[in-house]
Length: 482
Image (cartoon, rainbow, N blue to C red; front, side, top):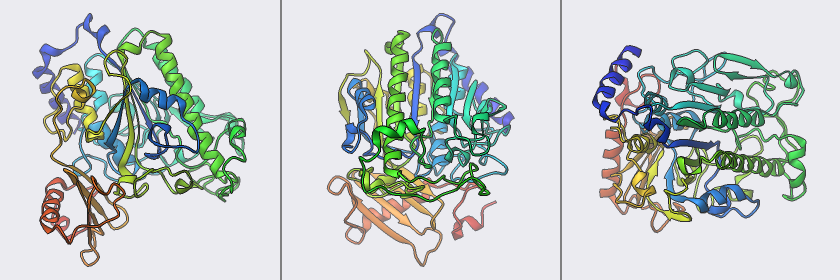
């Protein structure tokens, strides 16, 4: 499989040889910073209506650039959503389509033949770094970030262990870094602080060369934990508090993926978003201090909708705003995300767009930014024209699938959103159809009134889903596949 990828990359590089950066042009290439929050809801930032707590730095980022109101994640859980982001392929085509763990640590690996956005950037003269949560291949596997285009990696390889904010260890490339301050029941080294320091250092180290910083923070995914000093400004402000009883020292899975206990879940969640907001501000301050603002495209978004785990209370905070659903739903609340793009001198400040876009659009956007051809099999469309306020091509439709909870599929075309539930059980299969223009909250199922639209949607679902032997629905069509 690795050989196939090398052949593909070789042919692709020949095809765009005239576009290859020279030693001179490399210095003018646009840096890219992609900050990916973890389970942050559409309504969890001030720019999209959050009123329970403030996100001044994220809101400032939105005012400095463009806010997308209809941007969608790869799907409704971590690993497949990130696979769509890295490969430019939606979940009917991408390599990782579910959260499948591998013992003792990590997830099922993305295939060696996958061509990632990091590999494309690296082949075009960029230094690439990932800092945070990976979840696309266990340490040393073909899916390890160092083998998928990233020169540097620091953080959690395993998304299950990323549940814990005072972990026993993190990974720095191929080295397992033990955190002595977190040994046994100690909680002295807060992983988001360690990861953030590495991300800022990466910017500093590469200020004189083009770089791609992929910053998939773990905040605000459960567990809901922060250093005590971070909690103080929020204590007593979100009453009645919600207490969560979770893993304790001595429990088998304590700091091994189980969520820790939290007596003040509301305050902890607000504090965690506060940390995220501050860290976004510090990234922007670093770019400004180094004179990189005009040569850096900064993107901020989230991997899926708000979760209901570890004491989280998205209804209390109105985390999905006007949208229905949460993480693991294919309703808008599970997949529509806050999305901000800022690039001083290139993106008009304080602009808003309703252009419909998705994670798999990032890879072709990067290719257009580099003036090179995108892979032929991408499902994405570059949104660079939208950023530059030029004529923008539109998707014919967007497609998602989710393998858990009986199997789910969804397709969006024009103003219509169709969701198919219980895919794996034809006797329980249920179809829902919504007009998002009139019903953003997906409250009125119009499937019976529009059988023609349902028929079109089901046809699109069928043609969008390809067989994947490692992640597949169990309905009858799959049983005859190799």
